[in-house]
Image (tube, rainbow, N blue to C red; front, side, top):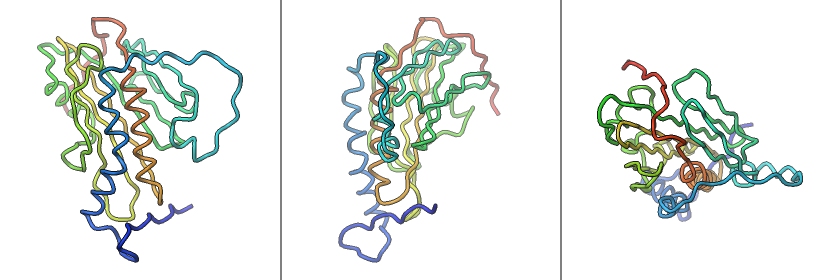
Length: 238
């Protein structure tokens, strides 16, 4: 099915949103996600939900917001971390031989990329981000609308900055939202990237809700298990 056309802004019937109007819409839509950044430094690690009676399947719209499924936690021995996942049953996690842990939630068009690694010298936040971008094409806040950016204490003791925003796109196109976080501590680096896409009249709201959930639960609750980084080989620059 083709995505439904996006709702037009008030006061401009029959016209596509102009860049200024689109920016205002995006800022307003991402406000819930941006507001959660104030809570992340104080977030305690999110425990796995205890088993309970089976729950009825949520409606399709609710599932696409990520916040109606049961909370779970994925443990990566390779990267030596615990990653909380909203609607954990809906995520497919790939943690084999690739350079990243990849968690995909097909129902909401949401993906997470996470990894830790060891540097030969001091792992500053800037150096960690530069290294991660050599390995993979990642969202750049400067190339889209950044709704919020701040320093957070995740993982604990790391100098980490997270940015939340939406990518530039033409009027009527699907909206791509992102949250990127890079941090360093000692000789250890950390990278977390969340991306999601939505189309139609509720696209802005869906993108904001999904980002709010993964920032609060997955990023805010992420824990490292040991002080020494796991021995994951570093990829050579391309």
